[in-house]
Image (cartoon, rainbow, N blue to C red; front, side):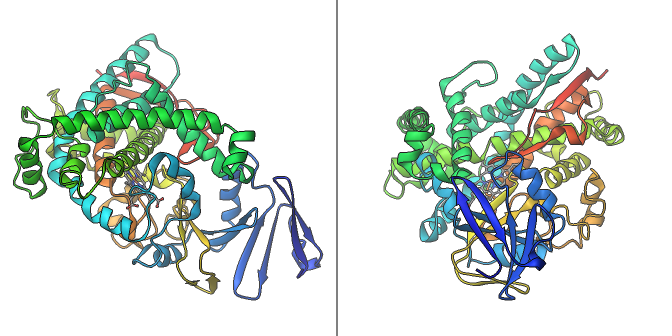
Length: 501
Ligand code: HEM
């Protein structure tokens, strides 16, 4: 070995160092091998606080580093110019093998598919996020926000601190269920097997990803929660299958014509009293052309993908934003002022036009996604050797975009830990490198749901801050972000609420 080597003892790695220049620092060793590749060897990757430690380590590195997980390298990238090389263009669009752990649940839907399948699905699904269709979902965002606010009024009346996280998460789950499947699961008011299965499945998948000894299915079954995983999977798939078959029965030429009109921009939009409410599922059925272009299985993997990708992400984002606004009274005062200027004494539901006016709230949402991006990292497979500045990344290496670190580059975001929504005012963001801020990823494989997500967040937060003054009861240190599939606060978001006059 060239003065350094690694031995695995069960799941723990021992790094042996026998060259004096490598023996700097007790935790991390940084060395250059063959002058082409920069190695960061993280000794304690499997510690529970690995995410926070990773961030700390990154702060001393030049925007790139490597971690070994068993015999697999993960190259971490967190500099705008490197992110651009990876994300722009069609070369490196395939996901890394880590995403295979999502296949049992999501199949190879839009998030997890590769190559030509991904290209044709993306082309097919892009029109389903047409402005007109999002416009029609606003009534769901408003309806579900009312339920949330009413629940919170009860908590505010009792007084004292409480954890907001789950209340907002259930609201987001209600929203995605009704918009994706056309099914009101009423998660905010009732307990359901499906809702439990959604949460449990995310946890089981995430913990398997980070435990190499559970990667083989037989070991997952033998040593891990493989059996519970399969039980939850059955609940999830049975539920979506039954929703799809009900919806297929209801699909008729009227819906078909409505969809055609909405996608072509001819359809009527707005909160009008429409008799028929469409869901993404209807659009998938329409696209399937009598199940010739998409099978029931194909439709299910896309519905499951929307359910997975479309609720935890927005739930986390709304929670982080609420904490940050509630922890900065001067910011909250501006949010209140803006909402009051738009609505005055009128207690109408926000319309698309109203939401467009809430520009400062939008800056707050964007700034919260900078500090706490819901998807803290995402990974691609290098389709060919990749040149990142002076570093050559070999073909088939997993390249991980570490957004949390990317968004803290002090050269782009001075005083990066400070919550400053003004960073996203047009005049302050106009000349920023386009790949320095990528909470929704970027390039051709970016988040297809980002407009939906921002609209949902704005609507729910508008209802929340219109009704309450929020006092955040945690310091930044107490939040302790945990980087699972989604970035969550370890102990939730603890707040006090005070009704506004
Ligand atoms: C704040 C909320 C959200 C954030 C921060 C977010 C972020 C992201 C990111 C970073 C990716 C790339 C993931 C990767 O490459 O592994 C992604 C992909 C995706 N997102 Fe979102 N997302 C959000 C909300 C949503 C919503 C509401 C939906 C659906 C209604 C959605 C659907 C998807 C899909 C289908 C993909 C895969 C796109 C593709 O590979 O072509 N997301 N999202």
